[in-house]
Length: 194
Ligand code: ADP
Image 1 (cartoon, rainbow, N blue to C red):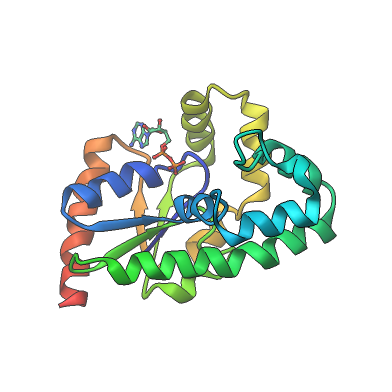
Image 2 (cartoon, protein in one colour):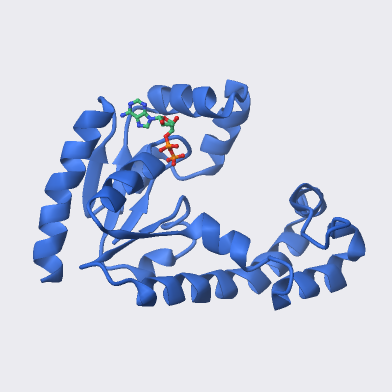
């Protein structure tokens, strides 16, 4: 099952509820980090393409530097995505295959945008008013709301996401409310998986 939503929508909070129920959660952001760890072929490819300047002294990827290099450069961004997306996908598939719970969750901010929906049977969307999302994301990151607003503008709109949803978790209420919705959905998913 895929779990998605915009920045600060409560994906991590919902994922924690699923984990509490014994369900294995694969985090797409984790997979994206794993494939560029030192020793992974992707990192050598990136260093060869962009120059050794994208590496820190430790040999790890300098993400800020890489982001700056592809910012406003669609060709370089496309090159990077062409390299990384298949590798991230492989990593996700490996982790999902290794899961031993009744079903598994793929938590991904870009589940719909990146075509990762092909890896899951159902799409569950975190839903809440955008003003509340902005408020929670800003509070969590200590970021200025304008920065969060920009990220939100680059992501799918609330409506576009809901259009792709098989299931919806309404996260406009308290965390306890979210938890009970997850428990209900969990029963449904157990039935579907069983
Ligand atoms: P995401 O993983 O989608 O970016 P998070 O799960 O990190 O979002 O939630 C964003 C912030 O909002 C976190 O600080 C989280 O603790 C808080 N939060 C999430 N859901 C609720 C809720 N129902 N009530 C209050 N705070 C919440």
